[in-house]
Amino acid sequence: MKGKVKFFSGSKGYGFITGDDGKDYFVHISAIPEGLRLYEGDDVSFDVAETERGMQAQNVQKVEGGSEAPAEESTEEATEEATEEASEEEATEEVSSEE
Image (cartoon, rainbow, N blue to C red; front, top):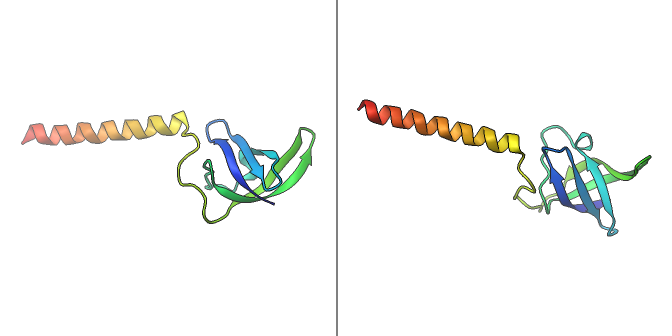
């Protein structure tokens, strides 16, 4: 089936995909290949699996033409980026003050 990412939280490890049939399918991070990131609006293809908790998306793959904007950046990723930027700024300031 094909669909569009409605929401996905990398920090929580789950989200929802709206299928071409108009239904929302739960997607767990374990249903996504390692290294693949899902963003709100991404076009995806997936298999539907009936589980004890309802219908879920499995074997999720991106389809060309999806969004490039993140649905939600994890707090951990944001913290790492901010720390790296601060370290780079401090290094630049140290070099400037030595001159």
